Length: 137
Image (cartoon, rainbow, N blue to C red; front, side, top):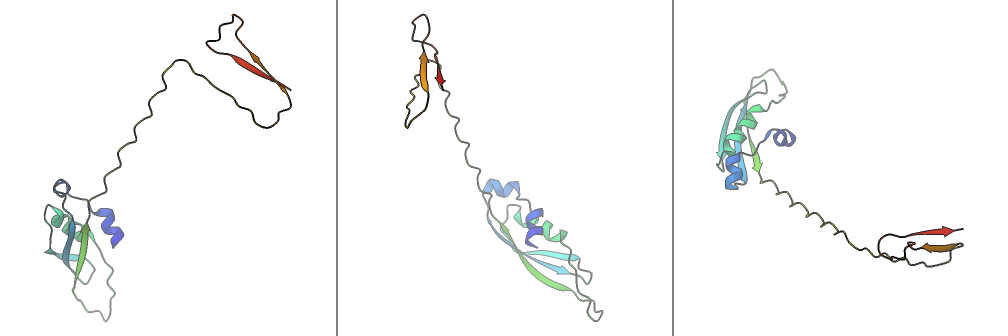
């Protein structure tokens, strides 16, 4: 029954705006076929929640065991809980882009490497801009 109610229950917009929460107690009657025939609110919270709880209870259908072929009505109460949905977390701010400009990269080597590192500088002697390096094995 909880899954059925959770699937079909819609929080009324009026209740969302008023931030209304609480439990609506609904009394319903089942006829001998398992159909809900009479629905009344015993305790309500207003703001459209009472009507929504009644609507959902009217959608329910039950299987009633047939014992000795008697046609019996059953009265039951159900608690329908209205709880405000949790607010969605604010989106994380996007990181600021790194400004274009001079970038200095430092490489540090630890341990041993079998090979020789040769750094190539620009031919014109200008140290600004890009450079490359090769590793000889």
